[in-house]
Length: 389
Length: 129
Image (cartoon, rainbow over all chains, first blue to last red; front, side):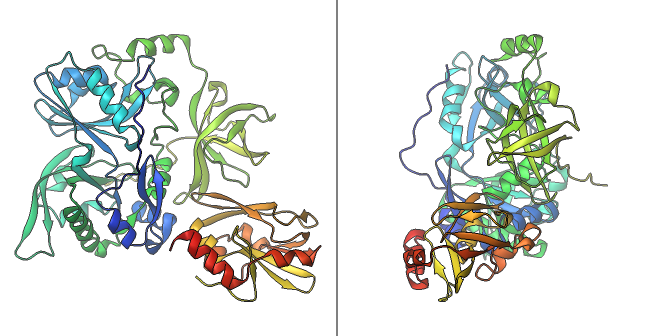
């Protein structure tokens, strides 16, 4: 069975907490963290969401965790505990992957970055930090590789949107045009307001994100002074692009439009890879890894539910946990994430339903306050960013 | 934030504006600000009865679903149909954007509600800001 998650006696704060409060952010508790949900001064969730779709927005995502694996057998260790094929990664490349239980269900989803010949960085979710670290450490003692928990070492800032590259390029000497999506580089973060010239050197800059938009995530030292300084420099440099600070509210609606899974919702310790529709990120042909046998078996047996996208066709908003009904009103599944989609201007949801009801166009209902409200299975992702010419 | 003195308030953040035996009901400036972008309002049909202290509808922002509590009992005469298409009006003009118009059943109930000054004191204590 999975290791028991450590309980958090006190609520945790990122190094930017005081900055968020000063800017008037509305704060909420999220997975044990005191985080901004929206910035009324930036116009709130919808304005933040649309700024990321059309311009640029920045997020404090320092609550995300980081695990480093380094040593001669680091690759073998990563391969053993993750479902994607890390042997395909060039130095400087990253991939979406997941840590699986032997049952083929999720410990967490992660981004695996290959930073050096024998060095990998796993970026993990806030709510699963301790569980993930213990899992990785306890399942890799046989490998000649050091496992370090670096979650508290970094302030992680996500700069997201079609203008993110223009904004960040103003602040770094690294050539961002040479960094492709899901690749990383190292470079300076220049503090333009400082005289004489000051900069942070050797900062990890990854072209990744959780918004279904182009963008970057930078990993800077976690002290409060540096964190606040960089945050403010980004806002200043981004003024010409209309940058706004964004909270977890828009982060959630952005990732939902892009059908990016959220741990505890679309993926969890009771949902397997096939059900979640993440086939693209699992490499069954690579050497054995935790969860593989169960998934091979699950595939042969077939599965009872699958993740679909729903769009409300009648008036109502599906929310996390609401029941999904068939046309006759019989309960057939549940909503994992549901919300108004600010950019698409529709009410959308992700839901688990039986495969027989998963075909695009299938009419279903979502139970909202005791009433079945009409919905329809639609193609996903709901939103796909326009390809650049 | 402003809380007009001619309205009465509930601790659940609704206001009621009384005119003889009729009244209009909406949500407060504090409520709209806490909810954020309002995207959906679910209101009772004209003719329905609402009961003081009981829910009579829902208001939803992008992030949250919040029940509406009746400040007083009565019969719904009219629903603000505009809110079906422009719910964000509540964010802009909370104090004047009514949701339902009711005929009051028991005006005595209004005594239990908060004055603007008391409501403001209440939200300052509750909101901690």
